[in-house]
Image (cartoon, rainbow, N blue to C red):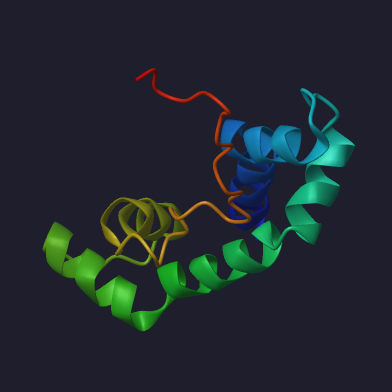
Length: 110
C-alpha cells in the first residue's frame, strides 16, 4: 500500500497535474493542498485507481513476466512496465480536461 500512495502523491504533485491545475485557475499553483484537491475533483485520483488496478492485474502481470522472462510480482516493476508499455489510452497519456486551444484574433495579411 505504501508504494501506491507514493506513486499517487508523485502524480498529484507532479508537473503534469500542476500544469493542468494552473491552467484551470489561470495562475501558477504551488500549494500542495490545492493540487491534491484539483487532482481528486478533476478525476485524476479515479484515473490513477483504474490504472493501478490494471497494472497489478493478471494481464499486465503476464505481459510483464513474458517481457522479463521470469515471474514478476513486484508492484514497482509491474507499475513501471505498465506505464511504459501499456496502450496510450490505458495509461492516461491523453490529457484530462483538455481545453480547446485559444485561437488568436490574428489574421494573415492579404
